[in-house]
Structures are given as C-alpha cells and as structure tokens.
Amino acid sequence: MGCLRRLGCLVLLAALLAAAWVTRERWLPLVKKRAGIGAAAPAPQGPPWELVTPESGAQGKAAIVRLGQRTGPVFANLSGAEFTAYVVQELSRQLPPSAMGTTATVIGDELWIRTMVNPADFGAADALGPLASVLGDREPMELGGTLDVVRPGLGTFTVHTLRFRGLSVPGPGIPPVLGRMDSGARPAGIAGDALPLTMPVQVADIRVRNGRITLYKAGT
Image 1 (cartoon, rainbow, N blue to C red):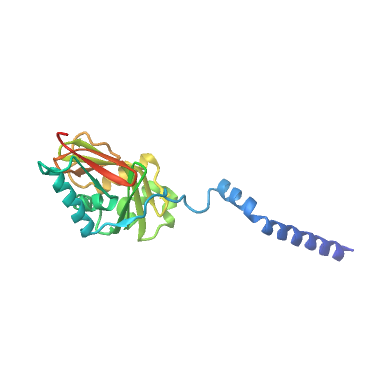
Image 2 (image 1 turned 90 degrees about the vertical axis):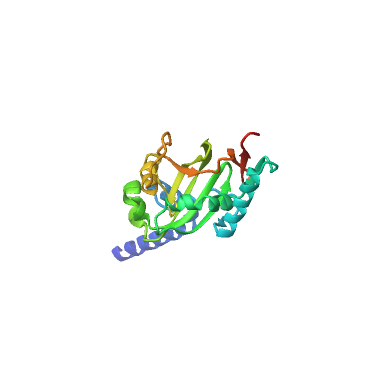
C-alpha cells in the first residue's frame, strides 16, 4: 500500500507539472513580473535607426549652410542621423574612445542616439547598482531626450532616458553618468541632465517631431 500510495503521488505530481507546463504562458509572466526578472523593456518604436556617417554629416551641414544664406530657406529639416552626424565632433569629445557604431533616430519629440561603449567608462556600476553585474565590456548605450537652443551658438541635448543594454538608469543617476561624458568646461546654466552642443549661430530655434529635426533661421 505504501508503494501504491507513493506511485499515486508521483502520478499526481506528474499530472500537475504537465498542467503547469501547458499553462505556463498564463502564469510565468506574472511570476517574472513579481520577481523583477525578465527581458528588459524595449526602446520606443519609431523610424528606423540610421547609421551616423560622414555622408549624413555632410548632408546636414549643407542644409545648415543654406539656412545661413541671406536668400536661403527659413528652416531646414534634418533626420536624426544628419543632425547627430553634424554635431558628432561635439559629441565625440564627450564620448570615450570605446564608443563606436553610432546610430540615431527621432521618436516622437525626442532624438535617440545609440552607440556601443564600455559601460565601465561611464560608471555603470554606480548608476545601476547590482544590475551592472550582467553587463559586459561592450554594450549598447541609448540616450533619448529633447533638443533646445539656449542662446546663439549654444544648444542642449537634455537626456530623459539612458540605458545600457536595455537597463534604464534611474533619473537621479543620469547627471553623474553624463558628467563622465562632459569632460570640458561646462557652460553656465546647463542642467546636469543635459549635454551642451555647439550650434550654428544662424539657428534660432529647434523642434523635433514626426521623425524630423527642424532648425529655424534666426531673424525669421
């Protein structure tokens, strides 16, 4: 009887395990959510990411040059890659040598930049805490934020979202990470969650929407 009882328990256990496996799609996501594990939240969807290249930078520069001409247009539309490539020299001074393969896109009213970096260059361990232990020596870093013109010749890229391999850095942790990027003299009045950008003096305003970055000519 003891053997039969044990055999019956094993059959019942096997049936329960089989039922749990068949219905795993119902309960497994809830378990992962409560345990705080699972896949990282995906980046917002928008236009395709474009590789930032010298060619896209030349296209962006040509559009801005036309904007500065007396008989030129009153505004210029640039893609995320064209704008990023145009200011890439400014950004390259704020990114470590480990950064490579930079791409960009516009999602909603934000510019998004993605590049491969060594998270240690940015103090990811301090920003992410124990989560940083899952990062390797080469990981994608994503920055999403808004663009503004502070004054003639100076703009800002205010970072609202910062991720390493999909792991989001909490808001208070963004300024310290950006501080490691911004090694030069910081202009007065620039917030800690923003990167200063050298802008053409002929640009009076900048707006981001519908997958494009629109620069407006001064004096219009």
